[in-house]
Image (cartoon, rainbow over all chains, first blue to last red; front, side, top):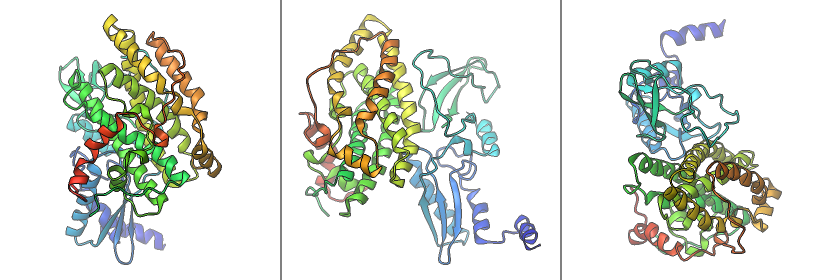
Length: 180
Length: 258
């Protein structure tokens, strides 16, 4: 009975500081891909309500991602300005972040923003590396016109997490969020 | 703030982690030299992106080495305030960047090696090292694929591209034994469950490199009697120069941060 009650409360008004924090975090955008929130990106692993402070646990996307420190600052600032401070941010490396953690809504927003979302990679499975067939990568649908007649221009892109493609049908270049 | 060199605690576990962290750090510095100089824009971005991943891996490993060391040294002090003999990277990564063929070949050799090492370190008894490895493994796979594709493209390419990448292979191959020779630092790491003997990586590394070089139609050079020893702190003549570049800011402006 009490669990049902708690669920009912959670769906109407945020019942706890942690739930309120999740709602605020869903408005904090990734600074390098400002189409998706840090929650949709799957990097917020946990929000812990301690007696003296909220602790937000983040998992970095890439080892050298320069946005990690900006995100930590943005998260802290958003929660403090929502009156939920004091806030600490901690980093958790394991399990390693995977693009599988990007939510369905996040994938939809990436595509609408012009970035082809990653396919599911089933993290933990062996990934074969082969040195022939340079154009053998699976066809990727253009996020603008939907054509699968696309080609990779560059294995690396404007940020650590993206590669550059172009559509041979509508002729537009687009970015791809690399599956990881 | 301190500008003089720090005294390194050379405990075996510290050395084991620094050998890997310094290899990532120094290769990242070499790759950074390509920024604005690569033959095409896409590969300029690729070199810088690979360097960025390696710097991230180096930061995590140096921070962890500082914790194992127990002398309060942070990643910056370890990166910028050691003397040459206290850097424990593979000699291969400190060699000058050379031409594009040399750089992509070296990237392929190191990424293959790091990938095999991260796979094993993901099961380390040291939870932090295992976590770093779990993340870095995914990045190393992408580096290996990209660099390996270029080795094949250059080797099985024009007469000029083939000549250059074969020359790169002949130069770099002399530094391979250092990737796999085992010593007390390795034995200690294996005994404690920290990480594998590097000699255990040799057979799978040679197999993967053979597949890549075979596809590239390149000839694997004959073994050389030459032995490099950067991972024990005895470096090539190039190391001092790269450290001069890297350390200038911290030595001139002690404690300076962005």
